[in-house]
Length: 99
Ligand SMILES: [Zn+2]
Image (cartoon, rainbow, N blue to C red; front, side, top):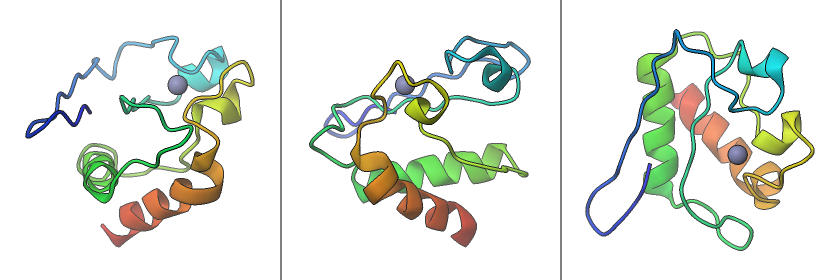
């Protein structure tokens, strides 16, 4: 999702395709990736973006077991930024659970 002034860009890959999105084959075969465009080393995605992601997950995936940051499954990346675990992962999970 790409907040750019007044629109978002959403790109879907078919869920029956297995991508190399996680950089960890086992995880890639049983997960989907949601990419947020931006630099989240010093910023946190705003509430509109987080609500959009929660809505996407709730509309498309009914039995989500976990939300993992990219670097939780692939230590070779800093994605999605060091604020994910401490600041916005829990917010995202709350938004998903709130439905
Ligand atoms: Zn990533």
